[in-house]
Image 1 (cartoon, rainbow, N blue to C red):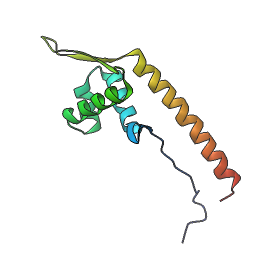
Image 2 (image 1 turned 90 degrees about the vertical axis):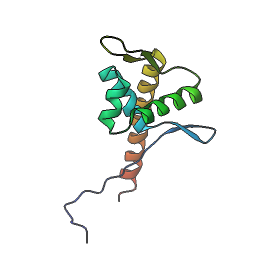
Image 3 (image 1 turned 120 degrees about the vertical axis):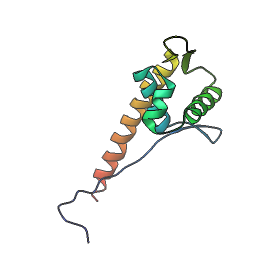
Length: 116
């Protein structure tokens, strides 16, 4: 039996698809944000607990499906390589965040309206 002092909450996830294939969601959003923060695909992959190759595969698939680059890569040298987001990637992150916020506001409003 549910504790009467516990609050019931609604949760939801959204993602973007092209022709039924996932392109962008919360996991890939996290990957791009970590790349932006640490200037490294490798560091982002480590922070997420995934292999570098998997992170690279996600980026490659997103870029191919979206039709534009998301990450600028600079090959390593003495100081190592670096990665940065393209302006298109920054815009995608911003729009996705606004979409999520608006979607969550709508879902929460409907949930409250139904008076669970």
